Amino acid sequence: MKLMRGLAKIGLLMAVVCFGCAGNQQKTDAKADGTPQINFETYEHNFGTIAQGEKVSYTFKFRNIGDGALQITDVTTSCGCTASKYSTEPVKPGESGTVEVIFDSYGREGKQLKSANVWTNCSEKPVKLQIFAEVK
Image (cartoon, rainbow, N blue to C red; front, side):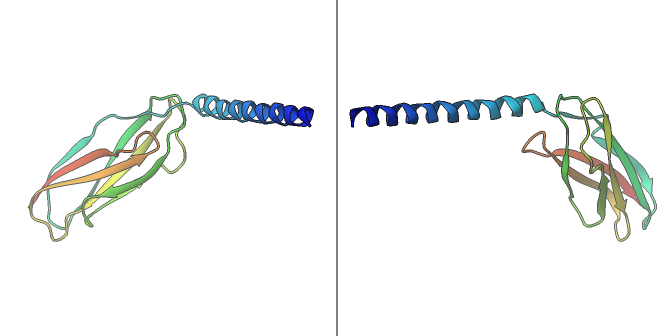
């Protein structure tokens, strides 16, 4: 009976050690995947003066300066008059991608400031891109 309890304790101890090793392996594997980091060439663009009703766009270029694959998960814009197109495939370390921001000035007048929030796997906070225009 004592032998059975002793074997049960040894078995339990081995199970705990094995689970601990598995947990450490996961952390090591995640670290091996690296950490992506996004860096845009510029974070704002001024279209200058444009005619009311004109559609303009600007392509923001970025580079993954981290050591893990970068993924854009979403791009949200500040207004229905602003849309976006972006790289949907993962961007490997050292490679580049784009986020295009399109502004439709129909029904707009005067100074315009619009933004696009770029959500990635780099951070819980988005990267903010801004566009400016004077609509005449």
